[in-house]
Each structure stands twice: as structure tokens, then as C-alpha cells.
Amino acid sequence: MALHPAFVAYLDELNAVVAKNRAAGLQPTVAGAREALASLNKFAAPAEPIASVFDTQIFYQSESGEVEVPLRVYVPRPDETSDVILFVHGGGHMAGDIDVYDFSARRTAAATGMVVVSVDYRRSPETAFPGGLVDTYEVLNRLDEVLVDVAHSTQVHAVADSGGGAKLASIAMRVAEGPWVSPIKRQVLLYPSLDYTLSGATVRELARGYFLETDRVEWYFDNYLPAGTDRRAVSPLYGPISADHPETLVIAAEYDPLRSEAESYVARLVAAGVRAKLINVPAMIHAYLFFESLVPDEVARTYEVIAEFLTTGDANWD
Image (cartoon, rainbow, N blue to C red; front, side, top):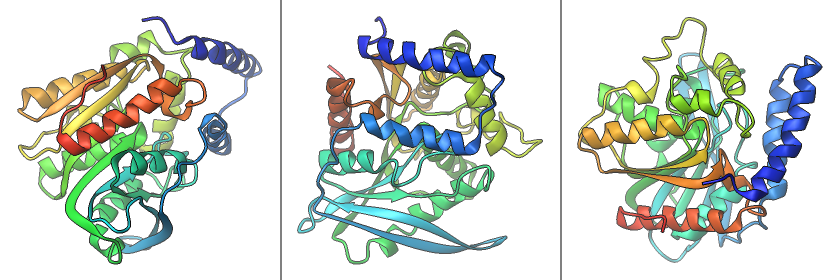
């Protein structure tokens, strides 16, 4: 399907700026990446009202000392016991935080009626791999501690986009390798990053001009992965798959350079006997959930699909 007309207009303007910056020899910066992602909030719909929202944190001991991981908890139905969703934001492991992704965590809580715990993991380059991944895992296994005063069931699910999807898939990979355990029953990965080698066909076919560009992804990875890292070995796309892998829904976007790795990942899960499904959303770009004012129908349908899958274990786009 052709690119959505709203994105044609948006990308025409964006790509002109990108081309000008390239011609001037401007290089990306950490601050610029964070500001650019945060600026996408201008396209979001008004914040979804949630009955109870509060900030908290966990602490844990790492090899380098005590680590604090800030959290934001969304409780849409305080008088009811509901399942719990671990929400892990994206941003190339460098940008994004619980404020930038507040709109999406709220929409997830409202759509599902479940308690949502949003994780403000440490980001690169200040904290390289696997710091933010370990932060996320520590939160996952301390949810009862975080929710001590919140009515919740023992059932845990997860939702993540882009680099956050990489973290969820990496947790599942480490569970399969043996040292980690996870309570996640069902997870939704939105246009996830799964291949640190960037070997997928669409990484080349859609390398420029579609919002997320391959050279920017390479830059993110260079800042996230320490020099000498075996990028294939740490890529969820190529990792082991355990028999108790979470039921997984992957939502990809047609005009996303990461689309082919999402397709390959789901194919591997299905071949291994995991309950997994891929939905390719036509005419969309990477991170399209930020752009609700441009593509409201597609964004609304995505949250409906997320809720359907986490509630029933199945979902269809049509």
C-alpha cells in the first residue's frame, strides 16, 4: 500500500531538513536525539485521564554500586484487581523516558484496564549495554514490591516499542539461555529493534527517507553497544528460544526499515512452537503511535489490538 498521505506531507518537510543538515556536515548529538523524540509529543492526542497515576522507584545493587530506577504507575481501575503490564519505552536506547512516553502508557492503561508500570531505565551513552536491560529485568521481578498498595493479579504482561521491544526480546533470550526467569505471559512488541547486525532486507530497501534511517540506527547502536561486542550474539533475532517464551504479538509498520527483522523474528518463534503473531500495519512508518493527530484511526486501532491480545491471546487488524 502507498505511504499514508499524512506521512507523505510530513516526510517531505522532514527530509528536506535532513538533507540540508547532511549537506552542511552536521553530526547527530545525544541532546539532539532526545529533543527530537520529545518534540513528537506535539502530534499526540490529549492525555488520557487515568484514575490514579504515581511515581515511585526501585533500588538494586549492581557491580558498580546501587542503582535507582524511576517508575511511573498507572492504575485505571483502583477498585478492581487487574493484570499488570510492564511498559518499556523505545528511543534507540538513548532517547525517551517516562515523561516522553506518558501519552502511550496512559493509552495502554485505558485500553486494557490493566495496571501499567512504566520503566525509566538508564540510557546510553551514559550507561552502555546491558545496563538499561538489567534495569528493566530488575523491575520486572520486583513488581509486587512496586505495587504493594495496588490491587493487582499475579498475571504479568508487557508492552514495548522499538528499543524497548529489543529489551523485552532480550529478556526472553536470556531466559532461554538459562540465568534469567520471567513472569511475562503475553507481550506486544511494537516495531521492535531485534537485529544489532542490521542485516534485514528492509534495512537496505528503506534506508533513507522514511523517518527512521539506517545510519541513525547504526549511530544508536554504536553508542549503546561497547566496542568489541558480538552484535549477532546479543541480537534477539538470532538468540535461543525457550519453550516457555511469552505469547508474542509483533506489530510492524510497512515503511519501517526494521520491518524485515520483525517478520523474521515471528517466523522463528512460530517455528519453535511459540504462540506468536505478526501484524504488518499498512502505510505506516516507524514510531507511528506518536502521530495520532496525523493517523488517528490507525493509532486507535493499534491500542484496540493490544488490548484484545493481552486479554484473549489473539488479535486481528481487520
